[in-house]
Amino acid sequence: MKVTYRHQAEDDLIRQFRYYLVTMDVPKIAIRFRRAVGVTVEALRQHPFKGPHYPLRNPRLQNLRSWPVAGFAAIRIYYIAETGSLRLIRILHEKRDVRRILEKE
Image: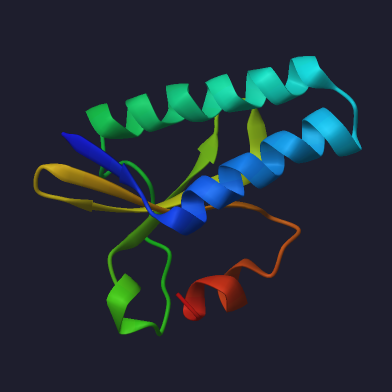
C-alpha cells in the first residue's frame, strides 16, 4: 500500500518534532516521536481501516479516519484509506482546534 503525506501533514510532523527538540529541549523525545510516527504509519499501512471514522461536514474528507501516534496518545494521525493508498492528511495534537482545522482542509 502506497503512503503519501499531504504537505500539511509533513509540516505538522516537523512542527511537533521541533517543539520537542527546540522549545522543550528534549531531543530524546523528539527522536522517539519521529520514530513513533513511522511505526504508527507502518501499522496503518498494514491495517488501514482500523482507525475510527472522524465525521466532518467537509465533503472532501468524508472518509477521514484517525489513529493515535504510538506512545503519544494526545497526537493523532488523520488519514484517508483508499484501495492501494493511505493519504496522511494531518498530524495534530488534541489541544489544537482539530475540528476547525480539518473543516478548512
